[in-house]
Image (tube, rainbow over all chains, first blue to last red; front, top):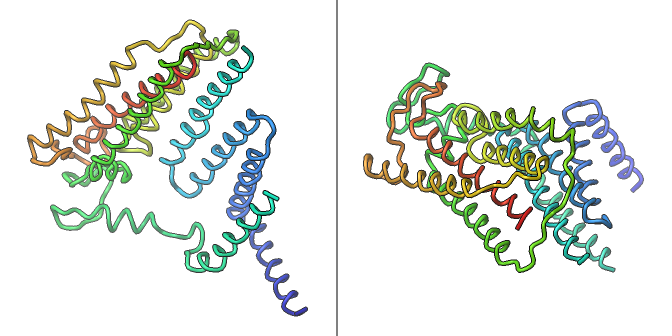
Length: 103
Length: 241
């Protein structure tokens, strides 16, 4: 049991070393981790505007990954639609519902 | 209690994924789909003998576009693209009907910002030029009608935010109608001249020139105008309706 645990731990250590020394892998893991953090924040945020900004940030980070994976078409479309247009439309809808609540 | 259930379900899915699916997949980022798809499958011509494509040299191929995604989207699966354009038109129609049927109109009130107004005057022509470049060079460089039209609509959004008096008039709707029916007219011309709907009936020219790939640049310019007009009218209806 103890030996198995040590074996798993050493495997994990070598994997971590591999990730940290390889800059491309480090980039993927940093951007992916930030995307996960932002999406959890978007689910848990108290204000709707904060959730919207976090969603926009998730799209913007996914653009970086698309560029690294050599898909520039998808990157252009995601940058224009996902982080620009969709956020603007949702923001307008949010403002309108707030205006309706006040009256 | 809800969170515990959510964590449990996520854990079950993740363990299934890690144990059963991940060992089958190739290593992340090492999959040479680029080489496989481009040079062996897509550029296989059905008319002539198989030969590799050379930039600015090979001429009269079945698809004359240097960008392979474009040759799939507008050449081989053009009917699919016509369906996508129809879906976008239906979405714009839905937003228009919804905002026209609202009884109580609520206008968004905000003050003009001086810095934003001056900066918009400098940067707006560049944004419009970039959008036009994306859809005119759709068969040569990455991009095409949909991203180009979206960039133009984003320029319109900037103009809307910086200038209070600016409104998207009926010109956008007329542009959209003309461009959308132009796509169908191009398809019908292909049917009249070659026998198949949306056939590439023009000569394809040399790969890499601006005037090449036959009917692809025409269709992409039409799609760019249509998407730009449609998305800017959606934004203006969301803002004003």
